[in-house]
Image (cartoon, rainbow, N blue to C red; front, side, top):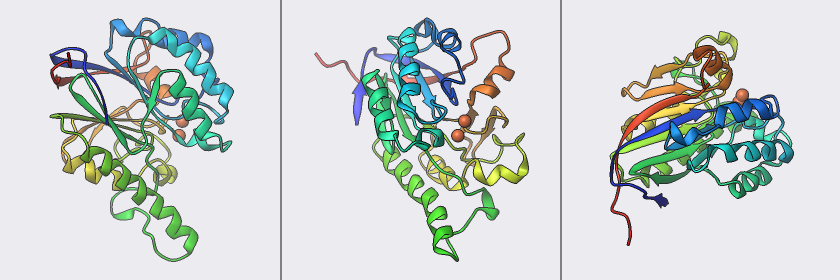
Length: 257
Ligand SMILES: [Fe+2]
Ligand SMILES: [Fe+2]
């Protein structure tokens, strides 16, 4: 686990956004979103679907414009769109070279707040969630969400900070996908992902993917869940920066001399 320690204590201002789908969001749109972000936030979370077809050039477009957000630390998880061309590893390299830390079952500490990230997967919610039973293809599909949940759990287990923040692409609860057609709820997230969030008493969670979902919900354990898909943010914050800002209590470790 990496750690960035810049100041002693207080709070950490998070800016979160997902589903940029570059180049669906133009260079100009990206500039508006990220310009001088450091004056409003201490860290930027990018919650997947950063590219439209998972093409390396789309990731380069984003990285070029993220320069306007510096020197804010930037964390990301991949979304399903990053996998479309099978070039997800190259996209991770481009993002990393551009100063974005991509989390995938991994954790990081910034200014005394722990961050855990995972893409997540779908499969549905509650008693109606898909079970690994029957055909091999169906078992494989259902197990993907189990594996993503195990990755999230191992990332959370590495964190020792009082405040823990999770970013993912898929939704862990039903409430933040409401607004989408009910027929596709099961493809928008999985409540399996909620279990470690409650057990580790996560402070806040940010996800994307459900473009027409609802902006806020809570897990059964009370963790606030924010859907930060860009189309939703544009509707939620008309006329201002389309980004979700949340302040998190932080207790930073002493700065190394
Ligand atoms: Fe998306
Ligand atoms: Fe997505």
